[in-house]
Length: 379
Image (cartoon, rainbow, N blue to C red; front, side, top):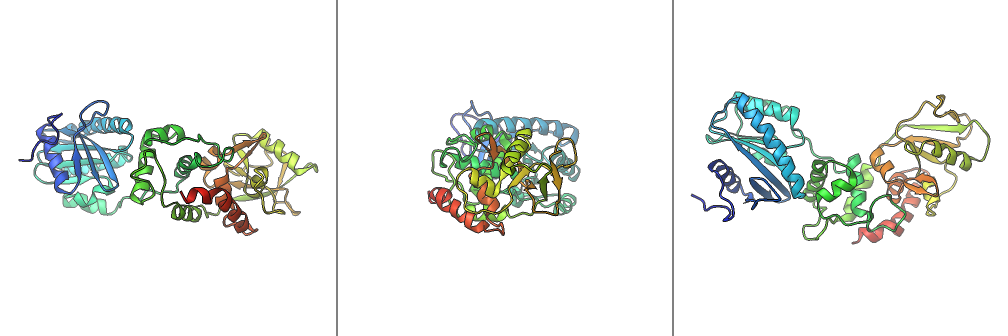
Protein backbone atom coordinates (compact mmCIF):
# COMPACT_ATOMS: atom_id res chain seq x y z
CA UNK A 1 0.00 0.00 0.00
CA UNK A 2 1.39 3.46 -0.89
CA UNK A 3 2.74 5.64 1.87
CA UNK A 4 0.52 8.49 3.05
CA UNK A 5 0.77 11.50 0.77
CA UNK A 6 1.24 14.04 3.54
CA UNK A 7 2.19 13.83 7.22
CA UNK A 8 -0.07 16.81 7.88
CA UNK A 9 -3.35 15.32 6.78
CA UNK A 10 -4.75 11.82 6.74
CA UNK A 11 -7.02 11.13 3.83
CA UNK A 12 -9.99 8.80 3.51
CA UNK A 13 -9.82 5.57 1.52
CA UNK A 14 -11.74 7.03 -1.44
CA UNK A 15 -9.39 10.00 -1.58
CA UNK A 16 -6.40 7.65 -1.34
CA UNK A 17 -7.82 5.59 -4.21
CA UNK A 18 -8.24 8.69 -6.37
CA UNK A 19 -4.76 9.93 -5.46
CA UNK A 20 -3.21 6.57 -6.35
CA UNK A 21 -5.17 6.53 -9.60
CA UNK A 22 -3.71 9.87 -10.69
CA UNK A 23 -0.20 8.99 -9.54
CA UNK A 24 -0.35 5.76 -11.54
CA UNK A 25 -1.18 7.86 -14.60
CA UNK A 26 1.87 10.14 -14.18
CA UNK A 27 0.20 13.02 -12.35
CA UNK A 28 1.95 14.69 -9.43
CA UNK A 29 -0.32 14.55 -6.38
CA UNK A 30 -0.20 16.55 -3.17
CA UNK A 31 -2.57 17.02 -0.27
CA UNK A 32 -3.18 20.62 0.80
CA UNK A 33 -2.33 21.04 4.49
CA UNK A 34 -5.61 22.87 5.12
CA UNK A 35 -6.62 26.52 5.31
CA UNK A 36 -6.70 28.75 3.38
CA UNK A 37 -7.10 26.17 0.59
CA UNK A 38 -9.80 23.69 1.51
CA UNK A 39 -9.70 20.77 -0.92
CA UNK A 40 -8.80 17.11 -0.99
CA UNK A 41 -5.98 16.99 -3.55
CA UNK A 42 -3.92 19.10 -5.89
CA UNK A 43 -2.83 17.31 -9.06
CA UNK A 44 -0.49 18.50 -11.79
CA UNK A 45 0.98 17.22 -15.01
CA UNK A 46 2.85 19.59 -17.27
CA UNK A 47 0.90 22.81 -17.63
CA UNK A 48 -2.28 21.29 -16.21
CA UNK A 49 -2.91 21.96 -12.53
CA UNK A 50 -6.18 21.15 -10.77
CA UNK A 51 -7.48 21.45 -7.25
CA UNK A 52 -9.72 18.47 -6.54
CA UNK A 53 -12.82 18.05 -4.40
CA UNK A 54 -13.83 14.39 -3.92
CA UNK A 55 -17.17 13.04 -2.75
CA UNK A 56 -17.56 9.35 -1.95
CA UNK A 57 -20.83 7.42 -2.01
CA UNK A 58 -21.59 3.81 -1.16
CA UNK A 59 -24.51 3.73 -3.61
CA UNK A 60 -24.28 4.35 -7.35
CA UNK A 61 -27.76 5.85 -7.75
CA UNK A 62 -28.10 9.02 -9.88
CA UNK A 63 -30.48 10.61 -7.35
CA UNK A 64 -27.72 10.33 -4.73
CA UNK A 65 -24.75 11.05 -6.98
CA UNK A 66 -25.91 14.25 -8.71
CA UNK A 67 -26.63 16.30 -5.54
CA UNK A 68 -23.19 15.34 -4.20
CA UNK A 69 -21.65 16.25 -7.54
CA UNK A 70 -23.28 19.69 -7.33
CA UNK A 71 -21.76 20.22 -3.88
CA UNK A 72 -18.34 19.05 -5.09
CA UNK A 73 -18.48 21.50 -8.00
CA UNK A 74 -19.25 24.45 -5.73
CA UNK A 75 -16.53 23.50 -3.24
CA UNK A 76 -13.97 22.94 -6.00
CA UNK A 77 -14.78 26.36 -7.45
CA UNK A 78 -14.32 28.03 -4.07
CA UNK A 79 -11.00 26.26 -3.49
CA UNK A 80 -9.76 27.23 -6.96
CA UNK A 81 -10.60 30.88 -6.34
CA UNK A 82 -8.64 30.76 -3.07
CA UNK A 83 -5.73 29.02 -4.75
CA UNK A 84 -5.52 31.38 -7.72
CA UNK A 85 -3.23 29.09 -9.72
CA UNK A 86 -5.29 25.93 -10.29
CA UNK A 87 -8.50 24.95 -12.01
CA UNK A 88 -11.28 23.20 -10.10
CA UNK A 89 -12.01 19.51 -10.55
CA UNK A 90 -15.01 17.80 -8.92
CA UNK A 91 -14.85 14.01 -8.60
CA UNK A 92 -17.40 11.46 -7.43
CA UNK A 93 -16.12 8.07 -6.23
CA UNK A 94 -18.54 5.13 -6.28
CA UNK A 95 -18.07 1.34 -5.95
CA UNK A 96 -19.23 0.79 -9.54
CA UNK A 97 -20.47 2.98 -12.38
CA UNK A 98 -23.23 1.66 -14.56
CA UNK A 99 -23.84 2.97 -18.10
CA UNK A 100 -26.97 4.70 -16.78
CA UNK A 101 -25.04 6.53 -14.05
CA UNK A 102 -22.33 7.57 -16.49
CA UNK A 103 -24.97 8.98 -18.85
CA UNK A 104 -26.57 10.94 -16.01
CA UNK A 105 -23.22 12.42 -14.96
CA UNK A 106 -22.35 13.24 -18.56
CA UNK A 107 -25.69 14.96 -19.13
CA UNK A 108 -25.36 16.92 -15.87
CA UNK A 109 -21.83 18.02 -16.77
CA UNK A 110 -22.86 19.21 -20.23
CA UNK A 111 -25.85 21.16 -18.90
CA UNK A 112 -24.66 22.61 -15.61
CA UNK A 113 -20.87 22.34 -15.34
CA UNK A 114 -19.40 23.50 -18.63
CA UNK A 115 -16.85 25.65 -16.78
CA UNK A 116 -15.90 23.05 -14.16
CA UNK A 117 -14.37 19.69 -15.10
CA UNK A 118 -16.06 16.75 -13.40
CA UNK A 119 -15.02 13.14 -12.96
CA UNK A 120 -16.63 9.84 -12.04
CA UNK A 121 -14.29 7.15 -10.71
CA UNK A 122 -15.39 3.71 -9.62
CA UNK A 123 -13.66 1.06 -7.58
CA UNK A 124 -14.45 -1.39 -10.37
CA UNK A 125 -12.38 0.57 -12.88
CA UNK A 126 -14.76 2.76 -14.86
CA UNK A 127 -13.67 6.37 -15.25
CA UNK A 128 -15.42 9.29 -16.91
CA UNK A 129 -14.04 12.86 -17.16
CA UNK A 130 -15.65 15.81 -18.89
CA UNK A 131 -12.44 17.80 -19.51
CA UNK A 132 -10.08 17.27 -22.45
CA UNK A 133 -7.08 17.14 -20.10
CA UNK A 134 -8.28 13.74 -18.86
CA UNK A 135 -9.68 12.20 -22.03
CA UNK A 136 -6.98 9.55 -22.19
CA UNK A 137 -8.03 8.31 -18.74
CA UNK A 138 -11.63 7.66 -19.68
CA UNK A 139 -12.85 4.06 -19.49
CA UNK A 140 -16.42 4.63 -20.54
CA UNK A 141 -19.35 2.29 -20.97
CA UNK A 142 -19.88 1.80 -24.69
CA UNK A 143 -23.09 3.87 -24.88
CA UNK A 144 -21.43 6.93 -23.33
CA UNK A 145 -18.32 6.51 -25.48
CA UNK A 146 -20.43 6.73 -28.64
CA UNK A 147 -22.21 9.84 -27.30
CA UNK A 148 -18.95 11.57 -26.33
CA UNK A 149 -17.49 10.89 -29.78
CA UNK A 150 -20.21 13.08 -31.31
CA UNK A 151 -19.37 15.99 -28.95
CA UNK A 152 -15.58 16.41 -29.04
CA UNK A 153 -14.14 18.92 -26.53
CA UNK A 154 -13.61 22.43 -27.83
CA UNK A 155 -10.20 24.05 -27.62
CA UNK A 156 -9.96 27.35 -25.77
CA UNK A 157 -9.53 30.34 -28.09
CA UNK A 158 -6.46 32.14 -26.79
CA UNK A 159 -7.51 35.30 -28.65
CA UNK A 160 -11.16 35.52 -27.74
CA UNK A 161 -12.50 38.98 -26.90
CA UNK A 162 -11.96 38.78 -23.13
CA UNK A 163 -8.68 36.89 -23.53
CA UNK A 164 -7.32 39.75 -25.65
CA UNK A 165 -8.33 42.14 -22.86
CA UNK A 166 -6.45 40.01 -20.33
CA UNK A 167 -3.39 39.94 -22.59
CA UNK A 168 -3.44 43.73 -22.57
CA UNK A 169 -3.61 43.72 -18.79
CA UNK A 170 -0.57 41.46 -18.54
CA UNK A 171 1.38 43.88 -20.76
CA UNK A 172 0.09 47.21 -19.41
CA UNK A 173 2.79 47.72 -16.79
CA UNK A 174 5.48 47.60 -19.49
CA UNK A 175 3.86 50.20 -21.78
CA UNK A 176 4.37 53.95 -21.39
CA UNK A 177 1.64 55.66 -19.42
CA UNK A 178 -1.34 57.05 -21.30
CA UNK A 179 -1.41 54.47 -24.08
CA UNK A 180 -3.70 51.85 -22.53
CA UNK A 181 -6.55 52.23 -20.06
CA UNK A 182 -5.47 49.51 -17.63
CA UNK A 183 -3.73 49.31 -14.24
CA UNK A 184 0.04 49.32 -14.68
CA UNK A 185 0.81 46.52 -12.23
CA UNK A 186 2.22 43.01 -12.09
CA UNK A 187 -0.32 40.31 -11.27
CA UNK A 188 0.65 37.59 -8.82
CA UNK A 189 -1.96 35.02 -9.79
CA UNK A 190 -5.22 34.38 -11.57
CA UNK A 191 -7.33 35.92 -8.82
CA UNK A 192 -5.50 39.24 -9.15
CA UNK A 193 -5.93 39.16 -12.92
CA UNK A 194 -9.62 38.22 -12.69
CA UNK A 195 -10.30 41.12 -10.34
CA UNK A 196 -8.57 43.65 -12.59
CA UNK A 197 -10.16 42.26 -15.75
CA UNK A 198 -13.61 42.05 -14.12
CA UNK A 199 -14.02 38.47 -15.27
CA UNK A 200 -14.74 35.29 -13.35
CA UNK A 201 -11.89 33.48 -11.63
CA UNK A 202 -12.67 30.49 -13.85
CA UNK A 203 -12.27 32.57 -17.03
CA UNK A 204 -8.91 33.91 -15.84
CA UNK A 205 -7.72 30.46 -14.74
CA UNK A 206 -8.63 28.86 -18.06
CA UNK A 207 -6.90 31.68 -19.92
CA UNK A 208 -3.71 31.26 -17.88
CA UNK A 209 -3.81 27.48 -18.26
CA UNK A 210 -4.05 27.90 -22.04
CA UNK A 211 -1.12 30.33 -22.01
CA UNK A 212 0.92 27.81 -20.02
CA UNK A 213 -0.04 24.86 -22.19
CA UNK A 214 1.04 26.78 -25.31
CA UNK A 215 4.28 27.94 -23.70
CA UNK A 216 3.54 31.66 -23.41
CA UNK A 217 3.62 32.02 -19.61
CA UNK A 218 6.79 31.95 -17.52
CA UNK A 219 7.08 29.11 -14.99
CA UNK A 220 9.80 30.87 -12.99
CA UNK A 221 8.78 34.54 -12.71
CA UNK A 222 7.35 35.72 -9.35
CA UNK A 223 4.44 37.29 -11.25
CA UNK A 224 2.41 36.43 -14.36
CA UNK A 225 4.87 37.12 -17.17
CA UNK A 226 4.40 36.47 -20.87
CA UNK A 227 7.23 34.79 -22.79
CA UNK A 228 7.84 33.91 -26.45
CA UNK A 229 6.21 37.23 -27.21
CA UNK A 230 7.30 37.61 -30.82
CA UNK A 231 5.35 34.51 -31.77
CA UNK A 232 2.47 35.51 -29.48
CA UNK A 233 2.12 38.90 -31.17
CA UNK A 234 2.37 37.31 -34.61
CA UNK A 235 -0.52 35.01 -33.76
CA UNK A 236 -2.44 37.83 -32.11
CA UNK A 237 -2.16 39.95 -35.24
CA UNK A 238 -3.38 37.08 -37.41
CA UNK A 239 -6.32 36.40 -35.08
CA UNK A 240 -7.38 40.05 -35.23
CA UNK A 241 -7.61 39.96 -39.05
CA UNK A 242 -11.37 39.67 -39.15
CA UNK A 243 -13.86 41.39 -41.43
CA UNK A 244 -16.47 43.44 -39.60
CA UNK A 245 -19.51 45.48 -40.65
CA UNK A 246 -18.80 49.07 -41.62
CA UNK A 247 -21.00 52.04 -42.50
CA UNK A 248 -19.61 55.07 -44.36
CA UNK A 249 -21.35 58.22 -43.14
CA UNK A 250 -21.49 61.95 -43.71
CA UNK A 251 -22.58 64.63 -41.30
CA UNK A 252 -25.75 66.41 -42.37
CA UNK A 253 -24.34 69.69 -41.09
CA UNK A 254 -21.43 70.95 -43.15
CA UNK A 255 -19.14 72.04 -40.33
CA UNK A 256 -15.57 71.06 -39.40
CA UNK A 257 -15.51 67.26 -39.22
CA UNK A 258 -13.13 66.94 -36.22
CA UNK A 259 -15.39 69.19 -34.18
CA UNK A 260 -18.47 67.15 -35.13
CA UNK A 261 -16.75 63.85 -34.36
CA UNK A 262 -15.83 65.13 -30.92
CA UNK A 263 -19.44 66.10 -30.33
CA UNK A 264 -20.68 62.74 -31.63
CA UNK A 265 -18.38 60.78 -29.32
CA UNK A 266 -19.36 63.02 -26.43
CA UNK A 267 -22.97 61.95 -26.89
CA UNK A 268 -22.01 58.24 -26.92
CA UNK A 269 -19.17 57.93 -24.38
CA UNK A 270 -19.93 54.27 -23.60
CA UNK A 271 -20.83 53.19 -27.14
CA UNK A 272 -18.28 54.81 -29.46
CA UNK A 273 -14.57 55.58 -29.66
CA UNK A 274 -12.12 56.75 -32.26
CA UNK A 275 -10.01 54.00 -33.84
CA UNK A 276 -7.30 53.12 -36.36
CA UNK A 277 -5.42 56.01 -38.02
CA UNK A 278 -7.44 58.79 -36.38
CA UNK A 279 -6.76 57.29 -32.96
CA UNK A 280 -3.06 57.14 -33.79
CA UNK A 281 -3.17 60.84 -34.72
CA UNK A 282 -4.76 61.71 -31.37
CA UNK A 283 -1.97 59.86 -29.56
CA UNK A 284 0.65 61.68 -31.67
CA UNK A 285 1.84 58.46 -33.26
CA UNK A 286 0.08 58.92 -36.61
CA UNK A 287 1.86 58.18 -39.88
CA UNK A 288 -0.88 57.97 -42.52
CA UNK A 289 -3.14 60.78 -43.72
CA UNK A 290 -6.09 60.91 -46.08
CA UNK A 291 -8.08 58.00 -44.58
CA UNK A 292 -11.56 58.89 -43.24
CA UNK A 293 -11.72 58.63 -39.45
CA UNK A 294 -12.96 55.32 -38.10
CA UNK A 295 -15.35 55.32 -35.16
CA UNK A 296 -15.87 52.03 -33.33
CA UNK A 297 -19.35 51.17 -32.10
CA UNK A 298 -20.70 48.09 -30.33
CA UNK A 299 -23.28 47.63 -33.07
CA UNK A 300 -23.95 49.58 -36.22
CA UNK A 301 -26.81 51.96 -35.43
CA UNK A 302 -29.78 53.13 -37.41
CA UNK A 303 -28.44 56.53 -38.30
CA UNK A 304 -31.93 57.87 -38.98
CA UNK A 305 -32.90 57.22 -35.36
CA UNK A 306 -33.07 59.92 -32.71
CA UNK A 307 -29.81 58.60 -31.18
CA UNK A 308 -27.78 59.33 -34.33
CA UNK A 309 -29.57 62.24 -36.06
CA UNK A 310 -26.38 63.94 -37.24
CA UNK A 311 -25.45 61.28 -39.79
CA UNK A 312 -26.42 60.14 -43.26
CA UNK A 313 -25.38 56.59 -44.15
CA UNK A 314 -23.75 55.42 -47.38
CA UNK A 315 -23.33 58.85 -49.02
CA UNK A 316 -22.45 59.19 -52.67
CA UNK A 317 -19.72 61.67 -51.76
CA UNK A 318 -16.56 60.90 -49.83
CA UNK A 319 -17.56 59.92 -46.27
CA UNK A 320 -16.70 62.11 -43.30
CA UNK A 321 -16.25 59.04 -41.10
CA UNK A 322 -16.71 55.29 -41.14
CA UNK A 323 -18.64 53.58 -38.36
CA UNK A 324 -17.15 50.15 -37.68
CA UNK A 325 -18.73 47.46 -35.53
CA UNK A 326 -16.03 46.30 -33.13
CA UNK A 327 -15.26 42.59 -33.65
CA UNK A 328 -13.78 42.45 -30.12
CA UNK A 329 -15.84 45.02 -28.19
CA UNK A 330 -14.71 44.11 -24.67
CA UNK A 331 -11.02 44.42 -25.49
CA UNK A 332 -11.57 47.48 -27.69
CA UNK A 333 -13.72 49.57 -25.36
CA UNK A 334 -12.23 48.54 -22.02
CA UNK A 335 -8.77 49.54 -23.16
CA UNK A 336 -9.87 52.83 -24.74
CA UNK A 337 -8.22 56.01 -23.43
CA UNK A 338 -9.75 59.35 -22.59
CA UNK A 339 -7.50 61.62 -24.63
CA UNK A 340 -8.42 65.21 -23.75
CA UNK A 341 -12.10 64.32 -23.59
CA UNK A 342 -12.03 62.12 -26.70
CA UNK A 343 -12.23 58.33 -26.33
CA UNK A 344 -9.62 56.63 -28.53
CA UNK A 345 -8.47 53.02 -28.81
CA UNK A 346 -5.26 51.95 -27.06
CA UNK A 347 -1.91 51.54 -28.75
CA UNK A 348 -2.09 47.74 -28.97
CA UNK A 349 -5.58 47.92 -30.46
CA UNK A 350 -4.44 50.47 -33.04
CA UNK A 351 -1.59 48.17 -34.05
CA UNK A 352 -3.95 45.21 -34.40
CA UNK A 353 -6.49 47.22 -36.41
CA UNK A 354 -4.16 48.88 -38.90
CA UNK A 355 -1.89 45.87 -39.39
CA UNK A 356 -3.85 44.54 -42.37
CA UNK A 357 -5.54 47.76 -43.52
CA UNK A 358 -5.02 48.34 -47.27
CA UNK A 359 -4.43 52.08 -46.93
CA UNK A 360 -0.76 51.94 -45.83
CA UNK A 361 -1.77 50.14 -42.66
CA UNK A 362 1.43 48.09 -42.66
CA UNK A 363 3.51 51.29 -42.48
CA UNK A 364 1.53 52.60 -39.52
CA UNK A 365 1.69 49.20 -37.80
CA UNK A 366 5.46 49.01 -38.28
CA UNK A 367 5.96 52.43 -36.70
CA UNK A 368 3.88 51.46 -33.66
CA UNK A 369 5.56 48.08 -33.33
CA UNK A 370 9.09 49.43 -33.51
CA UNK A 371 8.48 52.32 -31.11
CA UNK A 372 6.16 50.79 -28.51
CA UNK A 373 5.83 47.01 -28.88
CA UNK A 374 9.33 45.88 -29.86
CA UNK A 375 10.79 47.01 -26.50
CA UNK A 376 8.32 44.77 -24.63
CA UNK A 377 8.34 41.91 -27.14
CA UNK A 378 12.06 41.45 -26.58
CA UNK A 379 11.78 41.12 -22.78
